[in-house]
Image (cartoon, rainbow, N blue to C red; front, side, top):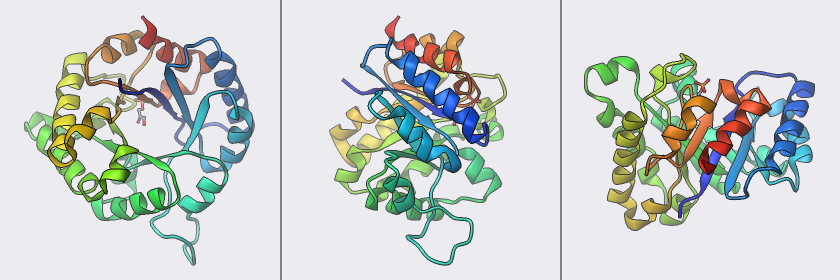
Length: 252
Ligand code: 13P
């Protein structure tokens, strides 16, 4: 049985005070939901310490949205994996399409970030996904395969065992346009096959999350698919109710 995971990517939203309220509401609501669903919240850096404190012992885990490529030193504005991990944060989102698109992150950058994440005990949530034109040109499977081969294939088998992958088609992020459950399943199966080609049977255990306009009304259909092990949620994670409802979609 693979882990079922619902992770909220808050992106650049909420003040620390608003984030604390949101985290409290998620932690309170989580109590009503089966322990079989793993909840992760990923607030901005400025909130991490407080959100870790609020969620401690509640079964809600905390992730960062990024980390630096380097260990430490003169890198103004950067936040290292070691700093993040020292707060009690367990996860880190890496390779989100917004980082690739707006901040020029390449596979080379991401290999360095992955190295830092693992060296400091963080579990990466590695994001892949094609742009609209790549899907329209029929290149979506190749694009996602390359995003996996160029980064994930460099992991050791031990590192691979801790990995979480998120498939987020860029055309579905924040657009209200969700991939159909069949489109998601088809890509998730492709991702798992690509991982299995390198890591064998271990790929059966890798949680592969779907992200892109996932909400309470479509989560059930998506999560019912064999290779969809949960969601990486943006907009709908900014309200505790809708985020928790998405988690409950597993139980239907
Ligand atoms: P939305 O759920 O707002 O489309 O964002 C998805 C996402 O990018 C999560 O990382």
